[in-house]
Length: 355
Image 1 (cartoon, helix red, strand yellow):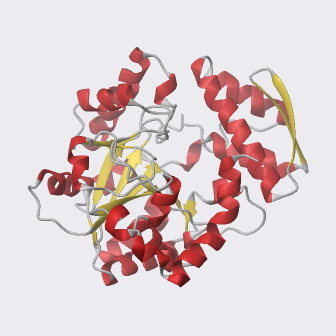
Image 2 (cartoon, helix red, strand yellow):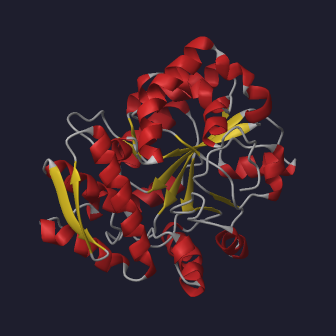
């Protein structure tokens, strides 16, 4: 069984055990650090019906968002911007126990469902925007993949010249199909990203442009960029795994995305998020590219809390992937992130700073 599938199956009962027993407190002195960066994506009302768990996990509800902000403030955790976090790491800003809320890609629901919650609380948040999303040229293929997997009891398709079939009658089967097809799609980035997507979806009657309209408009981005609560960062041009592209493509993804966003909003874009930031998807070459482009920080998707030592690794900052499927059912699970318990389990009890 795929490790990601197994991990998702045991996550909720394990979180419940760790929270109710108080065992998470033992992790805090070693793994808690000085703060956390939350990695979020979409803000939507709770969905009903079958889902591919890994896709459903990218969503949190407005109610969860509201409750999580209240949880942070009730527990002395300050909600801050990436720039203030950098100031704390540099010793310029006064230290505090903090969290940075970040949203990847740039979905319109960040504006319609998320923004009002942050305004209500006067809490800052960050959107890492894929520059092609407001232009309706970004393809959120994971949503297309969910459509394909949920359509029938057997998922059949071609990917990278391979004819594949999966039994998707269970969550385990749906997750297995998702992760195997994810790997093949990302491998296709080395040669023909769009061609790979067309090969997987078009023979199954799925329009690859179907979800192009889910992104923020430039008017919405401009409006939020004028609000001191909102930081607009860059998330590449086309949302491709930067570790798989050429040096010239990497430079284009990192620098042109920033230039396009700045031209539309008229304010500096100082922070970057790697579209795929796990180990093997972004490494030292990519970290150096973000630094060379003049960003003040860059974030990965590698789980860990922030430690003072990250002042020397600010282009490879870890983030904790918050799952609406898991945390949305019990706000107390946030204790497992702030104590560093879940990152410790993810990292096999290694205190990860350099990644």
